[in-house]
Amino acid sequence: MGNPADFSSSNIPGNTGAADLVLTNGRIYTVDASNPWADAVAIRGGRFIAVGRAAEVASCIGAHTRVVDLNGRFAMPGLYDMHTHPDLALAPGYSGDLAIGLDDPTPEQVKQAVLDYAESHPGDGWIYGQYFVRYTFKQAGLVADREWLDSFMPDRPVAILDRSWGCMLVNSKALELAGINTDTTDPRHGYIERDSVTAEPTGILVDGAYAMIHATMPPTPQHALKRAYREGVQFQSGHGVVGTKYVHVCEHRLNALKSIDQAGELSVRVEAAISWQDDIFPVKRRWELLAGERHFYRSARLNANAVKFHFDGTHESRSSYLSSAWPGESSWRGHLNLTPEHITDMVVDMDRKGVRVIAHCTGDGASDLFLDAVAEARRRNGDSGVRHQCAHSTTLLDANLPRFAELQVTAEFSPVGWFPSSFANARAVFGEERMQRAYNFKGVLEAGGVAVMGTDWPVSSLNPWIGFEAMITRQNPFAEEEGSFYGKPISLEQAISVMTINGAWCMGIEGQAGSITVGKSADLIVLDRNLFDIAAKGNIHNTQVQLTLLEGEVTWDRLGEFDGTDYAAIWQGELPNF
Image (cartoon, rainbow, N blue to C red; front, side, top):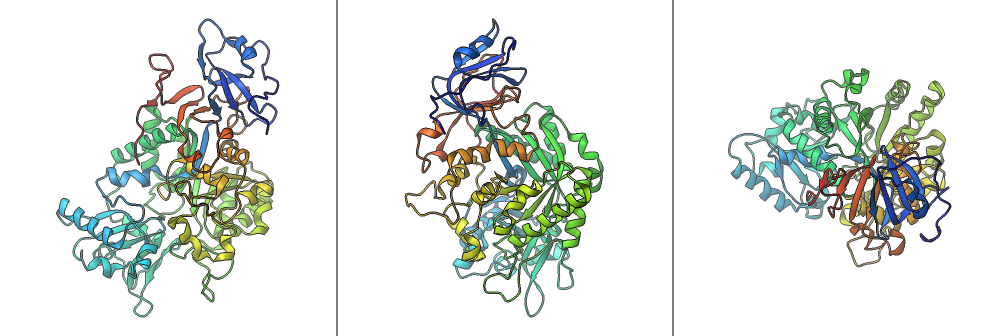
């Protein structure tokens, strides 16, 4: 990669006319191989009309063009977060539910939070919230089960989500209200953990099984969902995100998103994925949405042309579906929420309908089945043009790495856990051999595939720059030690592509966005540092985004550079603190 000062020829088409906005005197990394560096861009009608040298871009300046001097600042295309859940992260708290407020609370802290909530919210209503961490209970020598909850809260229903969202801890009263007992059949997309002798439910509900609890509770109110999505897009715009995917939605959530869109506050492009099953909450009009009602929500910033499947579970609950037995087990490979035949039928059908499948696959066995299903869809349907997405991709079989390119499937890596931390190290239950293949960005890229990042917030931070740095270092951005996580780092240039043009490809808009190229949507971010001039370790995660532009509109203005102009930002000032 050349030095930012070594600009290639400008990309200035003839007879462009005057620009609405010109950004000049910058160091602009375009992610366009034919014109990788520029020092100015011109924008008209929400698109780049010139990208190149400042002296030449100046020809686009007219009497009414607004000109901004970047004073040597670094700019690049906007970022893409391809898997996140603002509703799950924020709406429970905005609904008045329990928020323990810690990422890794001790059992005693969980207990005290439940007791404090009960005192401040008297009565017999549900105590529902987040989080507990099963791994932390194990470290403390305790078992997270209904008996533990019953010991201090026996008469009021309690339901607490695990940090990974892979299971829920409930007490006996909650099981009673949900009608879950020894005779209750496991749902196909999850299971009820049971005592090995009595078959009594232990109080741990895995994956889709905890939808039975949600079915007995009031739905999340609209005001909480609207606030959650509004603050989510505000935070994302303030961190340079221009495209994102909100996975697991229902009609209730789509209505909240549509209202924000109509209010002019949807400052990122959102692809919303409809839940295929009642994995997390009941989805009452699933079939109507998939049959065509999803198009009611379509706009320039919002579409719901995707469906989210949970093919397996999580490593924390040992329900990730592996290609061979879990370490220490003779035959247990994890839990497959759908039969292989069902997976294939559904993927083929959605592909035929032109609906993107986003398949939750944390185990290498689940992703193997998903790729097989996509291969069958390609065989039966031909190339439909639909790019399906392997969500999480925590571990992948080496033999499957080339298949992502062959089948045009996106490898989405999430949550952000590819650096040493107690959260990431809990994945060591996969076993040493699989951990060497964890979050294999490099393997997918070297095989010609498209890799993208998803924060999977609230499982990890919504700040995309944390995962950005750790892709390059595989080290903890917040720690002094030099220890590295499993797997191989990638280069800065590769990481930028993962976060920009690859995200646009994943959304099917790489021809219109994802790089700073003449004719494409004017999506651009200005940073407080030049990523090419700093050491990645300890620096990139602290990146401050000073400006975010989407379609030429200023969606975030940290310094108030456009105050009092026609380009006044949608968001500025302080960002929400999550």
